Image (cartoon, rainbow, N blue to C red):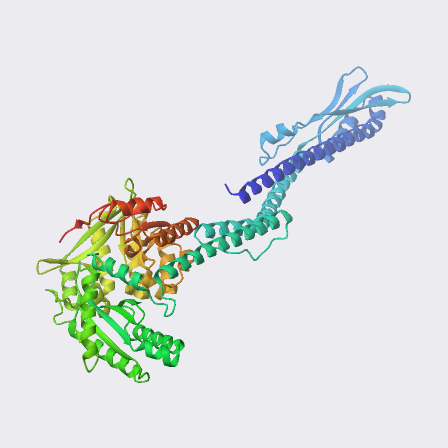
Length: 640
C-alpha cells in the first residue's frame, strides 16, 4: 500500500471518529432538548388545566371536565390526560397511542431511549386539594424530527468526509510529489541514467532528502565519467594511432584475426595495403608537420572513399603504411571501386611531388592467418611500386563456390531453405541464453550470415531476414524451453515501418515468452543511429525484452550509450580477448570496463573464448559470462 493511501486512510479514520462523535453529541443534545421542552409543555398544560378544572371538580361536573380535557387534548401533542379526585379515583381520561411513522425504523426508537414522563398538577378549591390532573406528552413529533435531523447529519457528514478526503488526497499527492520524483530518479539511476532533480521542494525534510539525492547522483555521474575516461585512455594507448586517430598495428591484427576465425561473422572481401613512399624526404625538406599532414590527408581519403558498411577495418600499421579490410563478395565490383580509389589517391599526391602512393591488393579467406595475408599484400605492394598506376592485384582472387545475390536470398527465405544454429552464453554452471545464428542452405552448403547479410543490406531486404528468423523461432515454439538471443540488422532498427512490424510480432507474445527473448544490437549500428536505436530500445524495454549490445569495444567513439540506453548486457568483441592472458593493457581495459558496467547494472559477456587460459584470465578479471568454442560449440536448433 502506498504512503498516500495509508495517510488517506488515517485521515479518513480520524474524520470518521470526529463525525461519529459529533453525530452522537448532536443527537443526544437534540434528544435532551426535546425531552425538556415536552416535559415543560406537559407541566404547563397540567398546571393550566388544573386551574381550569377547579370549579368543575368541586361541583362534580364530569361533563364540564370532559369537555375541557378533550379541548386541550385535541389541540396539543399529548399521549394522555387524566383527572383523578383526591382519593385517586379516575374521573376523566383521554389516551392516544403514540403514532409511529413507517419511515422511522424501530432500532432508531430503541437507540433514542425516550423516557416517558408524566407531569401532574394538584387541583385546588380554595385552600383544599380536590384532585389531580396528569399529562403525558406524545413523543412522535420528537421521533420524526430527530430521525430526519439524523439523516441530514449523515448526508452532511458523508459529503464533508468525501470532500475532505479529496482535499486531503490531492494535498498529500502534492506534498509527496517530491517523493515520487525521487523514486523516478532512483529508478532512472538503476537504468544507468544520472538525472538531477531540478524541482527542489520547500518542505525542509523533503528538501534535504532531494538535495542529498542530487549530490549522490552527481557523485555517481562523476565516478562513471572518470571510469569511462580512464577506460578510453587505456584503449587509445593500446589500440589507437595518436596522429591519424586510426587503429594501430596491434588493433588491426587483432581485428583481422578475430574476423578470419569467426565462421558466423566472417564476410568475404579484400585487404589493401596503402604505402606512402618518400615521406623521409618531405620531413627533411619541408618539416615533420608537412609529413604529418600528408599522412592525415591519406587517412581521411581512405575513410571517406569507402562506405562505412563495406570498410571493416582501417588502420595505420606502420609509419607510412595503411591497411584496409573491405567487405565485398564480388571481385568485379571491388576491382572497379579499387581502381577509382587509386585514381583519387594519385590525384591527391600530385600536390606532393616528393612522395608517391602505392596500393597492394589481395583477397582473404576463412581461417587464413594474418601473417599469410600480410605477406601476400606486401608482395603486391612491392609490385605496385614498379607499376605505372602504382596498383597491383594478387594474381588469383580466391573465389567462393557460391556467390549470393538478392534473388537467391529471397528464394531461400520463401522456400524456408535456412537453418538456425545456437551457441550458449554461460558461466560454466549457469546458462544465460543461446545466441541464434542463421545459415542459408544453398547447393548443399550452409552459408553463414557473413556471406549473405551484406548482400541483403545492399538490396534493402535485410529486415526480412530478421522477421523470418523470429517467425521460425515462434513457429518451432523454441521460447517455451529456451532463452534465445536474436541479432537485428540495421535496416530493422532505422526504418520505422520495419521496426513497428517487428514490435507488433513481439507484442503478440505472452509475457512469459517475452521474458525469454533477448534482442541484440550491433555497436556499429548504435553509434551510427543512436536516436533511432534509442526509440527501438525503449519500445522493447516496455515489452519486457532483455536488450544487449554486440561486438562492443572495437570502435574509438566514446561509449556514451552505456548510460543513455536502458540495456541489460554487452558482449565484448572477440578481438579484445586474443592475447588477454599476457597483455596487461587489455586486462586493465577489460577490468575497468567490467567495473563501469557493474556500476550501471550491465552484465559483461566475453566472446570468442577458445582456450581455458583465456577463460581463467577473464574470470580473474571479474567476468562472469562467456561465449566461445571452449565453453560451448555452435549447435543446430532448427534445421530445414
